Amino acid sequence: MVASLSRLSFVLFLMILPGFSGKDLPEPDFKIISFEEFESLAAKESEKLRIFNFWATWCAPCVREMPYFEEANKSNTDMELYFISMDDARRPERVTSFIEKRDIQSPVYLLNDVDFNSWIDKVNPDWTGAIPATLFVQADGTRHFHEGAMEEPELLSLINQLK
Amino acid sequence: MKNFRPLFLLLFSILLTPSLALAQNGGYEVGDTAMNFDLPTVDGSQVSLDGLENNQGAIVIFSCNTCPYVQAYEDRMIELHQRYAPKGYPIIAINSNDSAVSPGDSFDAMKKRAQEKGFPFAYSYDESQEVIKTYGATRTPQAYLLEKQGDEYLVRYIGAIDNNYQDAASVSEPYLANAVDALLEGSEINRQTTKAIGCSIKWSRNSE
Image 1: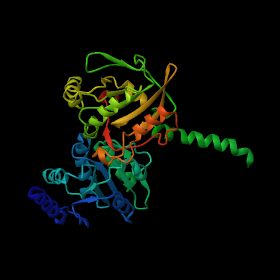
Image 2: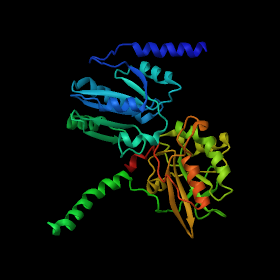
Image 3: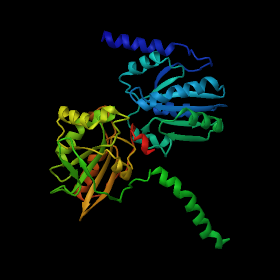
Image 4: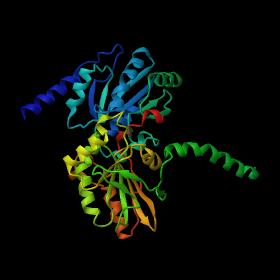
């Protein structure tokens, strides 16, 4: 009980931490969200190219490509990056300690809905469910989807093409 | 204008075909005939569809050692095999991950995992990745339920095992078991395909 309370307060502490990114981040760094919350986030109006990268702490190809996304986000003022974690919501500390250890700057939202078949197609019908996967939402709302890991040049050229 | 319709349809189908092929990853759809395979298993023998006896089909599950989703389903896979193998639907688990990319998925590591968990089903190694490419699986775990008709195996269900990897007791839709039950009862399978978040396949670097 004490352990779970301290874990909870640690998570709460992380949730109120301001974004340390050079860019002004309107959202807290870490949050557990429902699919409905993800949908309204993805549908939000924006003048920027918004990138939602689906990943998990234990997924090696995901972790490998994360720095490419973060670097791109630093050098592009006209994009917004969100990491959408598929980790187990019963163990949020795995994600929060990862954020701390890897010094992740972008907001990380843990999508807590294990009824995968009910929402995968709503993100994109081309998604088979494998991670990593990335959803790009252009300023006009057009969606572009990529399943699988990306190399840095591929990601940068895609960003330039879409923004 | 009416005369142009066949042309439009032709153009439309040409435009549409590549994207459809991409969405299916060139693999099987429900209704297709599945290829036979002959793969080495962790107990030192071989497993093939042709070599199964007294069966009505097979539950082929693309699996591995390292994926947390697979690990969450291992006990359920054991239970499904124990429930359905006697009824003619044994599980055949296939690991296709390249051990150079994912060392924890080597054949030796598979043998160790099978022993630790006491897998009652065949756990086999698709080292060339030929089987998974033909089937078109993109993640682990991903199940293909096959029904035997004569000498052929027809694909009847493709997708997830159920709708809650975290907690077997909270499953509200046991997709795979429902599909096997439907075949056993000779009724329609309600949900023939489902999707789930899974681990990407660790493809051989020289094959891409």
